[in-house]
Amino acid sequence: MTKKERFAFVLKYFEEQAPNAETELIYDNPYQLLVAVILSAQCTDKRVNMTTPAIFQAYPDVAALSHATFDDLFPLIRSISYPNNKTKHLIGMAQMVVEDFNGEIPATVDQLVKLPGVGRKTANVITSVVHQQPNMAVDTHVFRVSARIGLTTNATTPLQTEKQLLKYIPTEKVHIAHHWLILHGRYICVARSPKCEECGLRPVCKYYHSLVRGN
Ligand code: SF4
Image (cartoon, rainbow, N blue to C red; front, top):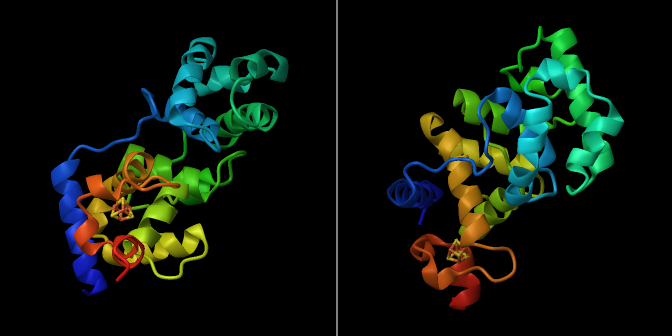
């Protein structure tokens, strides 16, 4: 099977199984999504969703957040991983958006990565979810699932995975393919014991053929 054929099978499968896949983070606007994605580093979406309502109530927009003090914001995100850094990042992000971007959440990866707490992955999520730009955010699920299925070969960094995926996924499908791979990794192709018997990708999955079936 060629890589092109493998990609075609995988994309068709996901299109049929999850035509409306989307982020599990709860948000109403780009500001809220950016806050949620910054908080989601090393933390589950479920935990983030339990935390953000109080933040959005106290700081309904980026201008309000830019005036937050560390001592006011910290208690609201205390239950999340790395609360110290994330508190600083959120305030710093809001201040930079207000001062350098006229209060508008930037819409390009190059601008977004200038913000505190925003790396390439976060910038890719924001631009693909909010603006449907063909940017592939590679988190631990996307990295693992892509390698197991055989969509990537010998990729050792998220950037290598991103580049290999972008080579084969049609531009208009990149933003949803990100969700397909994340959700597949979160619920089926889980890290420790992938649920191969429930998985419709078995016919093309390299991991399944090499390890599970031993051929
Ligand atoms: S067959 Fe198994 S290893 Fe392959 S994608 Fe499905 S769950 Fe993951």
